[in-house]
Length: 122
Image (spheres, rainbow, N blue to C red):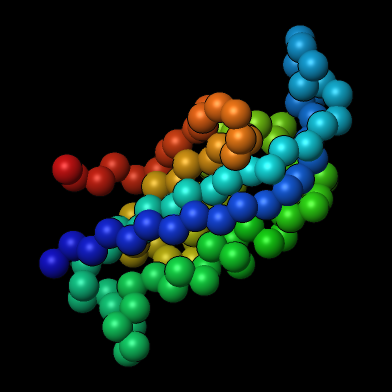
C-alpha cells in the first residue's frame, strides 16, 4: 500500500539575491515555511511502523534557522534553490522514498511559493 505523509516547519533567515534588478539585491529576512510530502510503500516501514519520522522536518530546517542563507547554499538562495536544497537532502537520506517540497518565502500576507520533487500519482 502507498502511504503519503505531510508535515511543515518554519524558520527565520536572511538572504539577498545577487544581481537581482529589484529590492531583493539587498539583505532582508523572511519567516520561511517549508512543507514536505513523503510517499512510500508500507513495505518501507521501519520496526516501529514509521515510514518517515515527522520530527525529521526539524532536522531539515534547523541548520538554516536564523542564518544568512547565502552563506549556506552554493547558489543564490531563491525559493526555487531552497526547494532543490531540501529535496536533495531528503533524497540523500532516504532515496527509496518520494518527496515533494514546497517553500513559502513568507508566512503572512500572501501565499507565494515554489514546489518541486517527485511526481505522485493521483
